[in-house]
Length: 333
Ligand code: ATP
Ligand code: MG
Image (cartoon, rainbow, N blue to C red; front, side, top):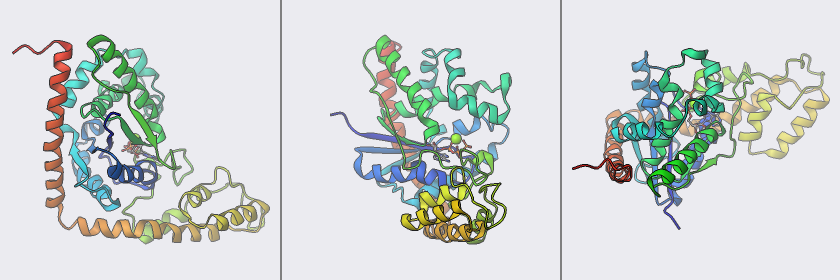
């Protein structure tokens, strides 16, 4: 049996939200107790691929995403937390992996395609953005991770990583193992606007640091069923974001099932439903936000955790890079 090594990460493009919690963070917390080694990366280099003109945004969010993870229960004594840009070996690996990937293959990656459309890039896509799945393969393989807990949108990245693993091993000799992605209980949490994905870039998020008032405001504006105008009208449950969240976060599943039946029949107003969701989300977010506020009082301590994690990650990276260079036969001296 090979070692169980876990790697996961977030882009420091904003604070983290409920989608991160159920898509990836919950699995990170579970796996840090089960794995032989667990890594958590703040992907600032990847964040720059579509925020090159906004370095302050990326920099300031490094601390924010670290706080979010720590507040949820990522434990730095069990998980090596590090910053991507401080591991130059990842950039080196990316260069070697780029030779194993064609432009056509990069353009076929369905997640990259979606994101390019969303960002309106077209042919003017930054080259760094187009190749980020290759850089992501390097993120995963620098520490020889074999388990990656991610949301559903990341599946194509793992597929592409495994193609790189196969090509690398075939050409240069067995070096890397296949990587398995592990999708959380909810692979893709919808946005408050009903969009298929809650995403920092789409402005449709409920953040893990939102106050009770902000949560209430956002829930009251949430997308439900546009044809459900009067209380007595029958409403649609499918595609209704409020029900999607109740399904995920309300522990009273029987109560939710009854509400769904009533909503479909007619006679249940959106406001009643939304008030219930507000209470449910307060219960989920309050303990996280309180812990976060406590941790945020000592940012130096958080940066120290990241510094020590980064040093540890570099030691691991140096070992893998030595092996890789030997395999590629570019070890000269
Ligand atoms: P950005 O818009 O900047 O890409 P994001 O909201 O997509 O931000 P990322 O930092 O790219 O967040 O993603 C971090 C992790 O969280 C990934 O594993 C991703 O799959 C997961 N994730 C993000 N949004 C969701 C969601 N709505 N549902 C489930 N998982 C999600
Ligand atoms: Mg993303």
